[in-house]
Length: 209
Image 1 (tube, rainbow, N blue to C red):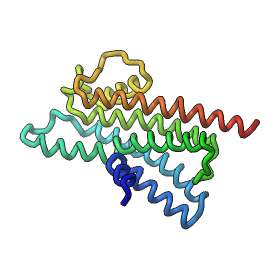
Image 2: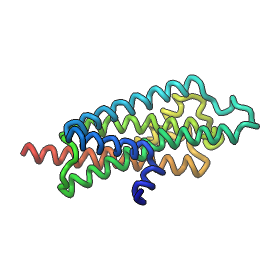
Image 3: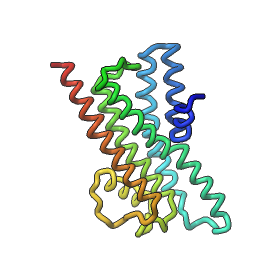
Image 4: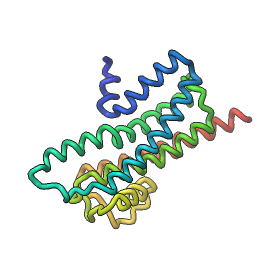
């Protein structure tokens, strides 16, 4: 296994799996099948994020668990964060910036996605970023924020005002982990909307010109 594959797995197991599946499908059935798989994964992961947010919002609270089990629960919550919301956020960031740079470099595409398809995927992924970071913030210890995120609605609201850089100040991180995450979320949002969206729109218009 190459160093790139190891790093990909460590930072985004969902990207590692999706890349393996897309390459396998393309080798067997061609670019059309790979294209459909990309669209399918985009919709499925967005739906999974929303369902996970609803499920955790209805069942999970940090302060419900006995203190003597805090280490075990911290490990479990850390695994949940790593395996899905953090992994998917990294996947979205890496996949779109890589694809946008490939388009600028005029590299041959591995899929048959049109620029209109890419814009739709980017918009879906932008919404998914809001939900994924909301999940992460909700699962972090409540004392890492100046005001406790008492519900999933609070967490999604905080994620939304973060990625849009509104920053009302009613919730703010006081620990270095969420402080780093809010900066990363804003960066992911900028990459997705400004870089990818601008490149896709510009290249799409140039193709029609």
